[in-house]
Structures are given as C-alpha cells and as structure tokens.
Length: 313
Image (cartoon, rainbow, N blue to C red; front, side):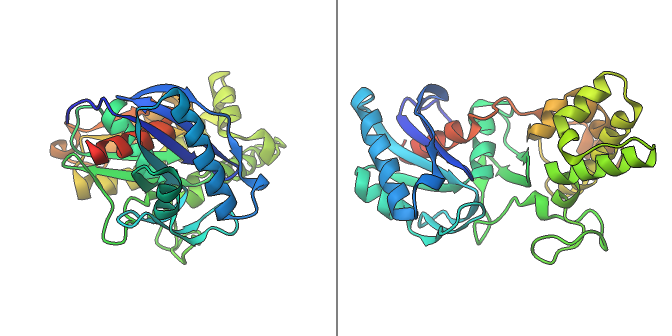
C-alpha cells in the first residue's frame, strides 16, 4: 500500500468529547479544540458543530478531501450508520455518514474506534509493514481490531474484533451480553483496580479503588512492591489466555497493545510474552510479535484520517 498524499480529517468520538485533527500520510498536521459532548442535546446539534469545525479547518487546509469518524459503538461501516454509542445518550440509529457528508460536501467514512486504532498502527505505527495484525486498546473496556491479509476485517455485521467479550473462564464473571468470563471483566481499568484492592486486603494493606489505577500499580511495582508485581503477572495470565486462543485461530504476525495497561511496559509485556509462548507451538510463536502501540491519544484521529484518505485514494 503506497503512502497517501491525501489530506483528510480524523474525528475521534469519545464519551465526553469529540477530537478533530488534520492528517496527511500519517502525519498529524494540526488538532482542533475538543468538542464537549455534554454541551449538545442530541446528534443533530453535535453533528452540526462537527461540520462547522471541519469548515474552519478547510480555511487553513483547503485540500482536505475526506473525513473519517471513529465512534465507540456498533457501526454499519458500509452505510456509515451508527447503531448505538456506548457512552453518549441519545445516539441510536444515526445515519452519521449521510448527515455529515451533506453538511460538508465531503466523502465520509464511519468506523468503530478500536478498528481505527488498529488501522493507525497498521498503516503508520508499530505494525507498519505487517499483513496480519490483532490490535487491542485497553482502558475502561477492551476494544480490538483485526487486520487480515492487509485489510481491516469487520465481519458480517461489522462487529468483528470485540476481544473484550471473549471468554477466558467458561463459568466466570458475567459480561454485558450474558457471556461469562469476558476478558474485559478482568482487565478493564475498574476491574484491575478492584482486583488490586482485594489483593492488598489479603496482605492486610488497605487501598481504595482510586489508589489502584494501572499507573499507580505500575509505579508501585517499579518501586519494589511485590504485591503490585504479582498483580501484573495475574493480568498477564488473563490477557495471555485470550491472546493465545486468538493466535491459534488467526496465526497473526503481531499483537499490538495500547491504552493504559500498555504503559506499564516490561511489567506487563515480559510476563505476557512468557504466558503466550507457553501456550503455543513453535510454528505459531516463532513469527509472533507482541508490541506496544506507537500512538497514544492521537491514534483515533490518525486512524480515521487514514481510513478516509485510503477510501478515496
């Protein structure tokens, strides 16, 4: 796939704000001030503000040729239709592509936010040059995206890659959809914090959930806290169980992991690699890389802009 010289807008739709940026060839040229979602009573007003922001960006970058929008929910990619957003009230059954395209006069693509992150890493990030990639973004929940044979794989209902919903324990904790043992019910930020509180309590150390963020646990482990190190080993066991199953199914070139958990560095990646290797044959493991994501908070903007540019290239 050749480098794109097309200038495009990437829009990253979060639970509390919408972020916009202009990109070309994987380079983030500029960003705009975030749009607080709470300031807009419904989809129509917010889409109108997004269109106004794009118009202002075009005053500086008149060669903007397309828009990519990533949303945290279920999307019909072919029609640019948002079924529902997980964190924003009122966003159900919204034809986002049609409305935003009409208001701006530009081609629009609408994608799931984890897919956009995967595409950013595939095109310009840690997985650049690889053909088969599984990307995870680890935060409040666990999102995932699949690049198979150099193409973003969405599945028949555009819902593929929901790694956080995969079971790691057949009679485990209940997930959002009735699925038991869902990975994100063990390795989401809140779940990690609650597990840490319990592990410290077993050692007669009182901690609060707010004190046990992934960053705080990582800092404690680096400072020599044995309990914190054990917690990271347990997180690696849970995550590695899921990744091993995916590796047997897809035999990817790489797993790319982003989000807060990935910021722990070797504390998570070293035991994770050992866990995954212990559950795979040499044929599957010898070409497999487990990599930290290159992009951080800007991955959504870059990935959506790249999807938009490549859609018209």
